[in-house]
Image (cartoon, rainbow, N blue to C red; front, side, top):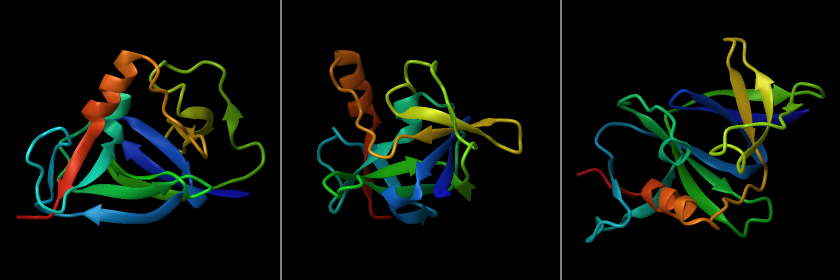
Length: 154
């Protein structure tokens, strides 16, 4: 059995292995997010990867969002991930996760398995030590557009 954190990103449900999530921080009220490339950045701003933008997920105009503190298994890489919400902590037993040979191009580098959700949707499992492909210029542009600066509330 492996524990996963199930998050919503627009119309997608993603499963992150729990061992890769350090903290889950709800962001209420007037948190400010701006393009990371914007100058000047707000004082004390930190880079956060907007997973909704990265995956091209349809994102509702959410009042409240969540930042997951993701880290690689060896602890060498870490980043904040902006998602719509944390849906549940899910226990995955043998046979729950199914290998998927075909996924849309935007999901292939991140996800490798799926699990059925009681709602009828599929939960896409994010690889434990996922590394984003940045070989193609289009992938690099999508990554840069997905980086946002999370500044302190005004």
